[in-house]
Length: 121
Image (tube, rainbow, N blue to C red):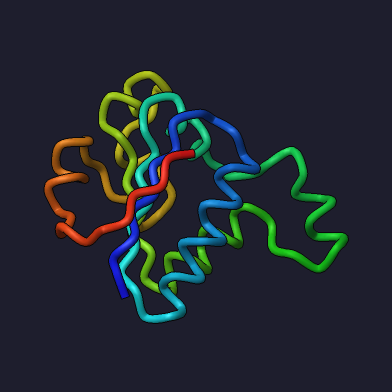
């Protein structure tokens, strides 16, 4: 299975939810996957992590955004917060949810193999 890298570039909770769902599916199938929150997307990592539609998702028997993030990371999804985005969002590494890595776009792309699939949302 080809490795998968997903880049989120806007602070859209439903795109984040969708990206986490795809990332978790890739990890559950045994594939390597990394999710990079670029610039303004990092703001979604403020704790406590929540999304406007969490209540509707929970009512439908689906996980909240925070639960989905935790589940995805348990499956082995690597989540990386952009260093510049952290500055824009006023976040420090210690304020990020446990297990979130910090990095930049150069390192994120350099860690990929030639056959890596990249999705941007």
